[in-house]
Length: 306
Image (cartoon, rainbow, N blue to C red; front, side, top):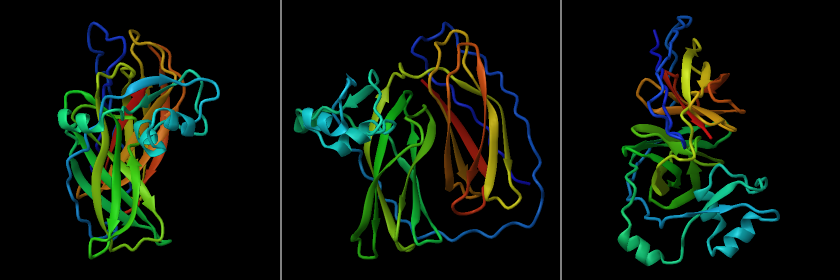
């Protein structure tokens, strides 16, 4: 019988309550249909190269004004659009809302910053790629937050290499949530088209900022139910998102589900996006996460509310 992994993560609020909200979670188990164990999908040879994260200067917050564009802001603050995007992975350049905020990386003294700042400890604990039927690769790199603080604005460069370590393709990858809670993990992920399945992968952290989580609310996940399909290719995840009465209202809620195979490798990621929640209120969620590789053995669920 498959093992189910139920988890919920407390997020730190802008208005910290006098006491932590009670963990009133009832986990209900569903018994999946039993059948023969499905065969594992082959994965490419993966070479994980652990590199020291690139130190970054402390960013500052910019409030978006009418008429602002990504390209003009990048030019104004003398940074590249890639740097601006890496610092704000949740912001769409084509639909920026007036009054919303952007994190602007400080590039005024890069040499001094590199000499004085301590890199954020965000180890890459695994990297795996899963080939697709059309000749592409979905690549995941699992990032561990070992700090007592939230890590946010996480991005990594994932590079595919041939047998001679020549670069075949490279892209910037992001996590499904804007942050990784303390003592938790989330993958960054990206899709490469027309890429050989035998390619090796190199992962380098580009950005990871320690935060006091003032922009996040203390949402909790209650009554989580995960049902893995008989063939292990999909898992249905459902439950409720709750805000304590001491919190402020949430205007944006995301739930991320990360699927793992029996060997602990990431095989799938899905993000569910919800609407507003009032203090003391709850909203339900239900969605599917699919495997891009081996059969799903466990699913971890995390929540983010702003």
